[in-house]
Image 1 (cartoon, rainbow, N blue to C red):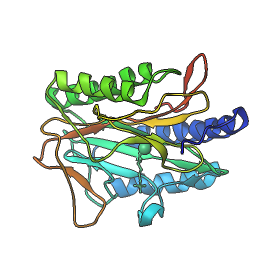
Image 2: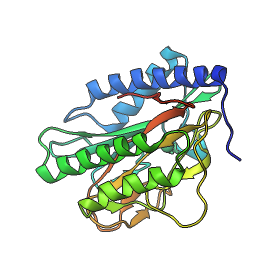
Image 3: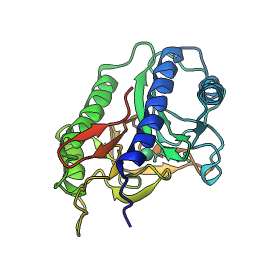
Image 4: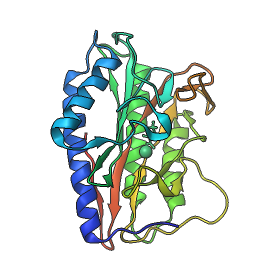
Length: 248
Ligand code: MF3
Ligand code: CO
């Protein structure tokens, strides 16, 4: 069942998204060569305390950190660790907040130092996948219109589109219906209605579509070792417009 949100509830989710955007903006400013992903996690935990919001990922299904930090061939769900970031890395950061019971979700991929032209293209195209998907996320369209937009943009560059993980509804909890695949899938697809709050999140690989989960049961890496990028926004559907609730 897709849980629609009323204006008061959307206002709460908007506030959660605003705090998340502020936090991610600050994170962006501290990320550089030489710092570790554990340092980023520590920063997020301490800022969450100050902002009065809970890091929604911490403890989710036992996830051990406040933010997902996914370098290079890690697609999503990378666990912060003590490896120092190096020039040439790309780093995907994914975070969500629980602010007074209202959940937000956003992600982006950052270049560290000097990054190859190929990786800059991967990040740019993944970002465009999200932007094109957001344009299709309007009342009256279907979830499948979002999926097709992501897929078409990525495949124009013959990039891999991750199939094992999807976007999703969000707001009252971290993951709600509907699922939002990043590829066209057969069968009925829900129509977008006023009051839907959605997290759209293309995960795009420079190589093939395939991914694997590591021994830690969290870290998702590309099957072929190619690099991967991830961009995500939370947005709210209204009858006459769509509001992007997160920002980076
Ligand atoms: N950020 C993921 C998503 O966008 C959820 C992370 S789950 C966690 O859906 F357990 F890693 F926190
Ligand atoms: Co998400």
